[in-house]
Length: 108
Image (cartoon, rainbow, N blue to C red; front, side, top):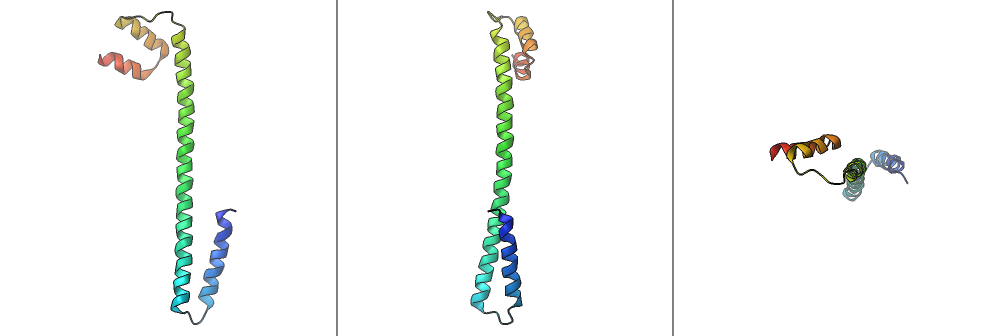
């Protein structure tokens, strides 16, 4: 069941409680507990939704990264041997168009 279906039930309970002329301390405590539980459930469901959105973003990024790595691997496999000199490595780097390697080569 969806959480929204329970919202109308909680609102009905709140309206019913509000219409009771003489409220006891026990009844007030029970009503407070219902409202607190409902708010807790509602908040946790929103946290869960946000976490699922984050998981979706991470999984999407992982898939994009996997695809990119596969493309780089295929490009690298086209070389019989990789050059060992800086200029040759820069050409390979340019061919791969992989920015982290560029930063690595510049810093060394």
